[in-house]
Image 1 (cartoon, rainbow, N blue to C red):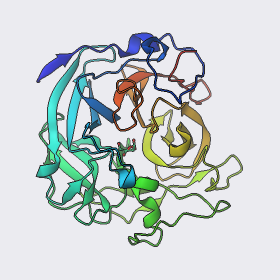
Image 2: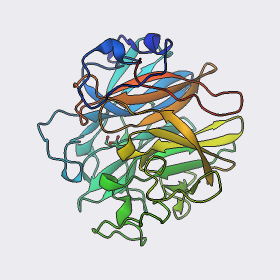
Image 3: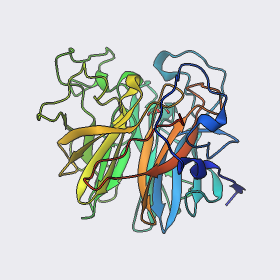
Image 4: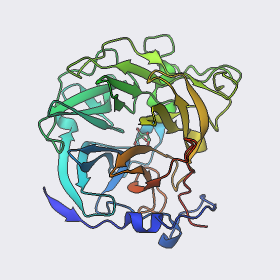
Length: 354
Ligand code: FUB
């Protein structure tokens, strides 16, 4: 354990009020934010939270102020390592465990350690992460440790058959582990529509089904896919696939799955419309039917989350750009309580006070 950081986050969130606000200008009034940053000495984003042995561990990505301001191919996100954090409970002191994995120790990767996730099996811990390979194509790797805090040792090659970004691992009650992944635009999912990488972007027409995120069951040793990745179908209330033009609801990036009352909740970012939304299904493979909004737009362009249960309450981990005054590539992680209604629907979180 390296050092303790005091968190300010949850207190304000428990006073949540619905509201809306102009998000176009950098925010300076900290009291208007629903919650405060969990980590303030570095920039952190894309928080994947899990409970291991009763403690909450957070696996965020690490935004670095590198001075790169060009947007092309996600260059602004100059991410070179993963830092790991933990806490006894939401609202408690946060422990910074330092670097769990560094870019220079991943043999196949060249740059851009984007949003990771982690899981545990038989006392070993597995960190899944996207990175660009030496040909500048995103793939997904896995690194293993005997401790949830690392250090993690990367497998020499990316997961065979993996592509795109934002892995999210889901451990079902029957012992099966699944990896969800994918992201359009900078995440390159649109370059895999034929099954192999094509450097040209290939988006469906407006009236065609949107590009689907992917799922693959993991092998018993959790380091490979045990099946070819399949499409995750997201349907509207009439059972039709969400269309490419439906930017308020279609998948963009940042998949996450949690199980509540026996149902599978598939949540994700809508990217250019800046929301976290969710859809519900009866199987980890889907199909999932669109239900509504989990989190309204936050300060900064990206929106990325995870959902975890701890001590009988559900929590939404997310990020915004409060610390950097609105710079999308310099973000900070946050947490607030998430409430499921009696009918299974999720109460929408607004990231701002009115
Ligand atoms: O942090 C880099 C990328 O930005 C993530 O992979 C996306 O989900 C978005 O948050």
